[in-house]
Image 1 (tube, rainbow, N blue to C red):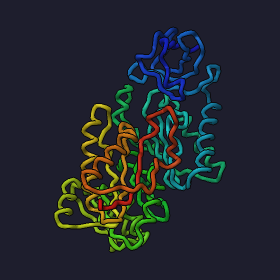
Image 2 (image 1 turned 90 degrees about the horizontal axis):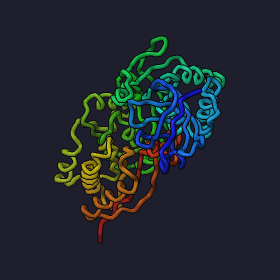
Image 3 (image 1 turned 180 degrees about the vertical axis):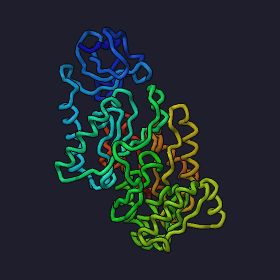
Image 4 (image 1 turned 120 degrees about the vertical axis):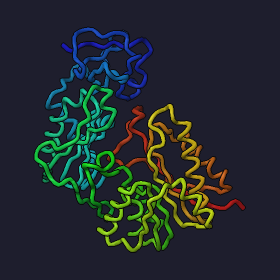
Length: 399
């Protein structure tokens, strides 16, 4: 018998609405013996069984739920079922050449992310309980892919996020199994990229913007384009390949710019993109003073907030960068802008954009709104799974 966790009366509202997390202050009692990372059974205040999850006394997220069925065994067959469901979903919703195969809570495997880049898997495990199940998840995933004729030649772990320390886990980075070349060639939307899974950000490449990059392509034929926070050049490359007349791609990271240049050469687009290593916040006012304008401006900044405590400062950052970006769009041109932080709610982000437009004395006509690609599904009631807000606007003069 596993230990039993009983909730306080009136608590577990997020869980009952469909979420997977139970916080420490929602728990009335824990009976029975357990170790951190063990599977426990969760009861409501009145003894009604709510399911099973793994427990960690080291985290404010005390329990991450694995199933709503309190009689379900969390065994090999259960893991295989979860992984098979995740793969079946991807086959129906996205191009699976390179995609996110497991997206933690949204695939009911909380705390683990697995990305596929061509024939390589990159794993990020962030919680103690799922870390114990990691080998079984990877093993079943490789078998399931093989049954569809997809052979995985290597697995690399990028469990090096600082958040692991909150679970009492060491940060880990390296091969799972035999070593291989960690520069991986992938193709997305017809564009080739060399992905550095060992040293790139997160798991090596931001797959979540796949279809947002495709949406921007439609605006770029014959256009003068400014791509801010270009990172490894993904939006810039899509713009150039779509027929942009010129692309200026900017990032503060010299490493990112060099990787973007390499990707441009890989696609034969090096003559159509000018890469600039500059702080975007400094550059945009300079371009404005020089009376520069663009047909398309793309703003894909890093998350300005990674906690609720810094949301106010993040609002200032988003408002400033969008104000500057809007001012650089010619009348009738387009702005593509996004926030990748789940601590920046969609309504607050839209309010911030509205304020930026008013301050710039411009009007925004919404063309498209997207979230992350379907291989990063949004699980309702699991707020942490909804993080990317992506808008395309036509920018119009006030007259």
